[in-house]
Image 1 (tube, rainbow, N blue to C red):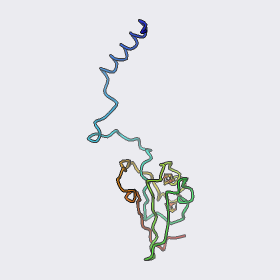
Image 2: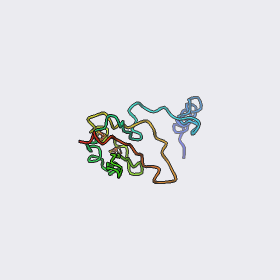
Image 3: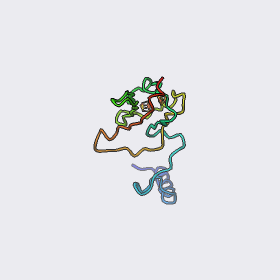
Image 4: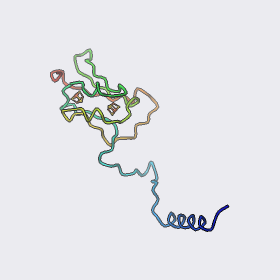
Length: 126
Ligand code: SF4
Ligand code: SF4
């Protein structure tokens, strides 16, 4: 049974909600504003990356792989299907090469399309 006190509390809440701005937005037309330190898709600044491999070693989900391709180039891949957006790779990168961006719309039908590729000059390998 609703008490008088409960009734007035509900009425007060309803009046507040009627007169306040909605917290939801009309997605996908509108997006919420993201905080500056939002942890979205990891990206690599290829010109800063030294292929030290620290990001790949620290990644808890083994989402980062660094391989030498057949044509002799270095390829760094980030598998967004495995990434948990923890930010450990950015934190451990001493060269400001790995950064978590504000990109967050990553859903895809094809799992292979969730793999982001970055290419680093071979001479930079350490
Ligand atoms: S992104 Fe940073 S931590 Fe990862 S290999 Fe490149 S320099 Fe090393
Ligand atoms: S954000 Fe975390 S899970 Fe994603 S690639 Fe970086 S270390 Fe791995």
